[in-house]
Image (tube, rainbow, N blue to C red; front, side):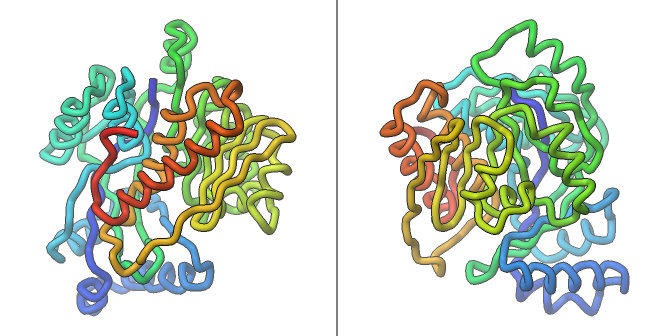
Length: 321
């Protein structure tokens, strides 16, 4: 059972966007330019969460011959897990529009159960600036339209093999994910959160489950200067971490680490959904993370890294481990 976000990724090339900056109203031009500066200072991928749907940005990115593709942390994980042979029920919402229909079609084609996907309003969009030589910069808006309490009750009653909780990082208020302590809880960019907001988000949504995160987000949550120290500092007993240099799994006091592989960054075709693919393949491959041998965990991390690299180089989702 997977609860969380679905949207379309609207991706344009950096040079095309930069040529069109002068046509933007001052507020949106200032927003984008300030986040470009912030992304350069941080040296990491950055997704900025909009407080509400922004029609100006939608029109702007839509005018630049974008790639419009299936996206959303929850949707990508649901699609990938189903394609890898798992029976998946997805709880989310999409708009009553062409983009929503596309998302539902691709989920159904992969074998995902979509009876619990609500169709309402307009499908959310995430706007991505793409250049293989730069870090990903994105702007997105998502709102939870489903009652998490009802989902939590259903999950406790049905007792699925695994519960995935996604999308909480995209809203600052707590969604209550900590009510399902055995679930996998997934993070995302926390660039827009204050320290107090991040502490509250961790307590309400990320502190009780199997935490799945990237290296930057681990450091943001923990306050540590490196991800391995951050994993040790966070109180989750089980943590899965991926990053551009290394990946790791924490089980109590044990931490299993594997290096990633080099790749030609000039050949990168896609920068969205990379972490989602890595996480889904790792979890699918390793099975019971508590009982798996260290050798299986390390092998599964390598498999997940290869799948993520294929996603970057081809733009395709995995269909087998």
